[in-house]
Image (cartoon, rainbow, N blue to C red):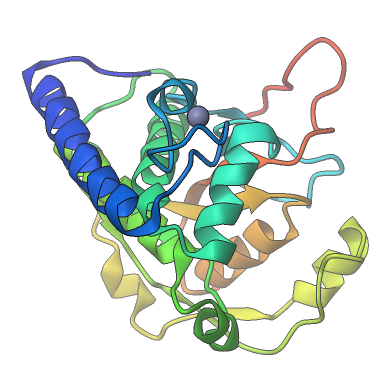
Length: 261
Ligand SMILES: [Zn+2]
């Protein structure tokens, strides 16, 4: 879903130069290896970098939470994408925010194209709303990985001519139990009411701006659905959900199911 053009080409060159500078810094101080293939040197080698998805696909979870906005993901939550997400999130390999942001930007572009009925207007404005991280989790990790990746994605979209912003419109409203052992129904119940929109959320969105919920991984869709619910309570219309990766087991045999967003 790349839209080549002079601006895009210059943007690509700049991205590569900046990525090279960042990598050089990492190599110098950390003596790092590629998170994908463990080749010594860059935290993401050129081969693994080139293997990252450039756009996204529809990724309906099974079962789908009722009313979930159109979900798009860059690929399955395994292999390289999983390594990238985890090394960035849990081990603070901050140099991975740029490639993760690039993947997320591609997913958002594909989602917007689908939402526009394949008549994507590159100039269509979009507000990316990250699912909120709990303060205690941000403190423990020492950074807010999703916010960092979302900012990278928005910057990349802007360089490609799409007016994109990051709207921290959501806050965690209450404690939730650890999700990892819960099934889809239990997750939905666990998360119900766990987020709320900031009081000024409506002011973040100008007319004709698409609102897209973003997260790193789509699992059951319960978290994204709760974020969507909280935004809708504040009067916002959510175009879709964009994630870097999605856990597999979502498409019936015969390919992706296409549904109206
Ligand atoms: Zn590699």
